[in-house]
Image (cartoon, rainbow, N blue to C red; front, side, top):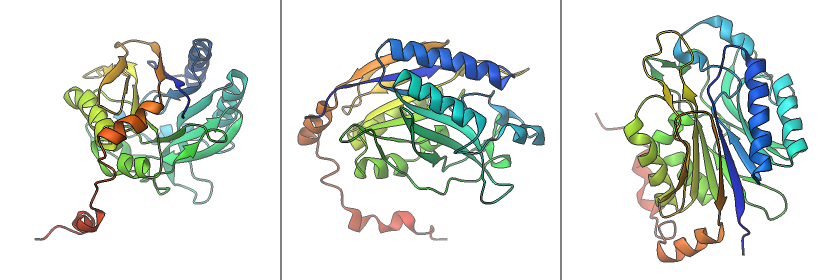
Length: 283
């Protein structure tokens, strides 16, 4: 029977100085570990302000290699020292094709680097001009097993949550917990609704972590926080407020199979009927 696991969500506001953000987040990861967290997820682009509020080439200087960049190395060490699995969303510089950049989450299992997820769906909206900076993710929807026989986790990033397909694929590949690191002040009416929908449709645990506060002059709406964990029935297990917070939640993984016995939505799929979803619309 799957063992329960403690999940920690680190919700913060950020400053213009990446080193200060890294130090602050490190302290909060340590706090989460002291509270018993075994898996800790950080918010989208955790060590910088959300720079995509404007289009300015200077921000490309913040991009780093994954693996191998200085923040990567630092956070790998943080995961090792605190004996936690750690999801670290960062600005990635492609080392194969110069000039390509991604919105990427690196996944560590304590001191071991497991791999990365690149954000698939990119917004181009006022205050969210990501297509200027990032290429769409090209690594699919990987699932990562923590240790031998440990929890299976996956992630999608922020705007990805508006699309059904990614979390469904991850659930079908065995993910038990789907993490959604986020930076949003938009669609507050959808935030909880979508996390609960992904959890209930896919009968998985979903953990969404959003940043909080205001970061740049004349920011219209503050990032509203309210990070939360949702169970496979769609019920909210715990929710943060709108300020800096470390949310640690016990996740009873055995409840996932219990729910699927009573709600066999994955069993009753009809993929042979869904081919139209991948076809261009008729004109």
